[in-house]
Amino acid sequence: MSVLLWIIAASIFGGVLSVLGAALFALNASMKWINALVSYAIGALLGAVFLNILPEAVELSGDMAKVSGTVLVGILLFFTLEKVLLWRHCHHDHCEVHDPEAHVHGRSGTMIMVGDTFHNFVDGIIIAAAFLTDVNLGIVTALAIIAHEIPQEVGDFLILLHSGYSKMQALGVNLLSSLATLVGGVLAYFALQSVQEIVPTLLSLAAASMLYVAVADLIPGLHKRAQLRDTLQQVVLIGAGVATIYTMGLFVHA
Image (cartoon, rainbow, N blue to C red):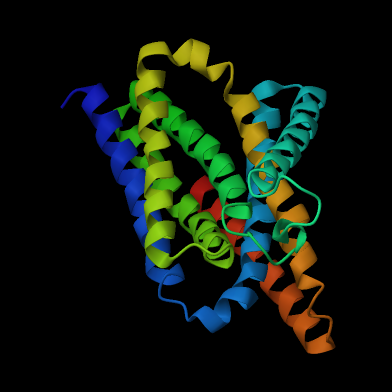
């Protein structure tokens, strides 16, 4: 089988398997647990940003200031995007969109999917680069990406469900986003050198979107449950999300 076919197969298999593996857990969770598991999703997002995505972006770029600046610009862009999403639902000062509980569908869900699509695209580039080096390395890399992506995809599913998506909508959107892995892999096969130059920027934008969703959209909702028991549960689950990403990172590097 040619290298291109290996890249296509691994990109499709890797993206779809990651989504389906996460779906087995997230979509079978009782809806009464969704609010609690959002805390886990926050931890997974923050862990992915600070333990994996940003360190990789800095390593590839070699310019900490450039990566930080891109993240800053990304946060401002995603703030603007969210404002646009709000504006689409409201054209006057006293509409229901100003209720923080209204029209949440599509806001944090859209934001997380934008960042996840960037990340999947970069995964495709990484898979292609590995296969162009050696087929065995490519297979190992694809398996490592699947293992690494599953906990993050679980967090994405939970955020989509929390944002008002149905289970089938959440599955469909995640599967569609996973196709970015195939796009990144095929593009990298034909233009790896030029594509590699923008990988740090794409990673930084992905980090910005995930950070914005966690801090601006999800964490404020946790403050509505201020009892000590709820707070302890939130802290534990956020820590569990971070620990999952850290553990998977150790597994991938090993």
